[in-house]
Image (cartoon, rainbow, N blue to C red; front, side, top):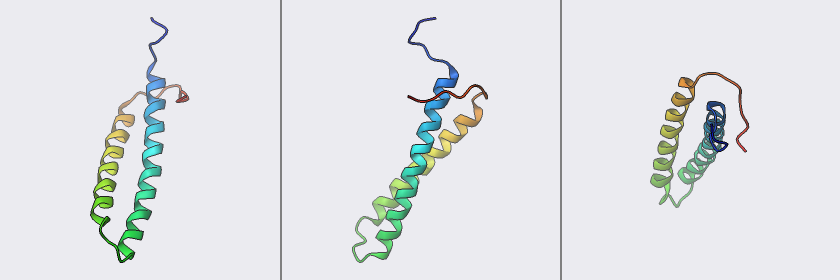
Length: 78
């Protein structure tokens, strides 16, 4: 096995880190959506809502992928 090859635990760690980042982005987008809905300038409301739907769909696919991965040693995503 070459040194550059990584195991399933490393890949799962990367996907878990990506899911955490997506959750943070979703949280921020939800706050932005509330601000946009309550402001007089609603020009970006549609754009924020679209991005929020896109990120939530990505998170759902990522969580399905993580659920299908075998449970093993958790690796840090450095």
